[in-house]
Structure formats: structure tokens, C-alpha cells
Image (cartoon, rainbow, N blue to C red):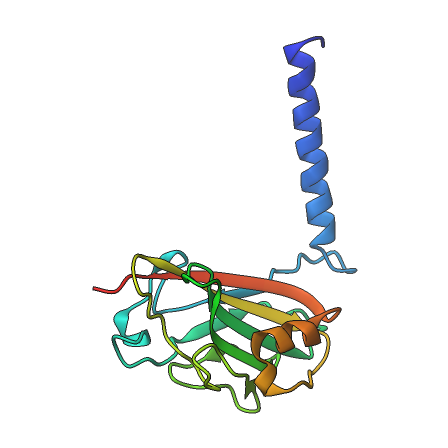
Amino acid sequence: MRGKGMRKGLIVLCAVTAAGFLVSTASSKEGVKMETLRISSPAFENNGSIPGKYTCDGMDVNPPLRIANVPAGARSLALIVDDPDAPRGTWVHWVVWNIGPKTLEIGENTVPKGALQAVNDFKRHQYGGPCPPSGTHRYFFKLYALDAMLNFSANSGKAGLEKAMEGHIIARAEIVGLYKRQ
């Protein structure tokens, strides 16, 4: 193989090697394929519109969230909801930590039992829904599986949680919702 044919062969070889690496890193010691941490919502699809009910224009309550495939080594989960499109930089809507690793769902307008909430950019220790001043904004619901329970000041907000999570994140997932005010 020379020229284009040789390049095609190398590309296929690299793709097979990369795929083999990914499969081997996604398998347990017993050879059973492990799933990746997931977060979803029955209220909106990834990159879909968040219903008005969950915004400042509606009831301003958190949407229901579903959690799947939490790694076996997780001792807790943490959730950060923020808007990187805010005019003055990323705006934090919700910070929740020490969520039990067996939690499969965060119901609408609820906080999992035993979980704690840090202060958000609305200066509240609770969910604050999307309320963009103009245009369509993206809202990232970021879920972290951690190898520890965390202890930090709830008044230190997202920054405090991120510092406390350093070295403890074993998996991460996210879903993005969109919202534009009428």
C-alpha cells in the first residue's frame, strides 16, 4: 500500500486501536461492559427547551431529573446547574451535594433526602430557574459521582463545591436545556 491506500489503512488501524482501547477501559475486571453515568429529564431533551414551569416565568421549581449508571465506587453525587451565557459570566442556578449514590431520580420541586444545597447566584440555598435577560441561554445540569461525602461551607457556593470535589470525581454527566423568555 502506497499513498492514499496506505493512509486509509492507517486510519482504519488507528480507529480499530482506539475502539479497542475504549472498550477495554469501559469493561470491568470480569469483562462485563460498564455503562457511563447518565443524567436526563422527562421534562426536556438534551439541547431541548426547558418548559416555562421550571423558570422565573413559571413556578420556578426544579425540573425532574433521572440518574442512571452510577459507578459502584461512588459514595455521593453532586449537581451544579449553571448558565454560561449570562451577560456577566456564568450564572449559578443550583448547587446540591451529598446526594445518595443510590438516588435514581430528583423529583420536581424536591431535594433528595439528606442532600445539602449551597448558595446560588440569586443568594438563595435552593433552585433558581432560568431567567435570561435576552436571547436563548444554555443551562447545564452537571452531575458528578464522587468517591467521598463532602464537607464545606454552604455559603461558599459553586466555588466551594468545586474545590471540595477536587480529587474525588470518578464520573461526570450532563444534560443541557435551553430557554428564551417570551
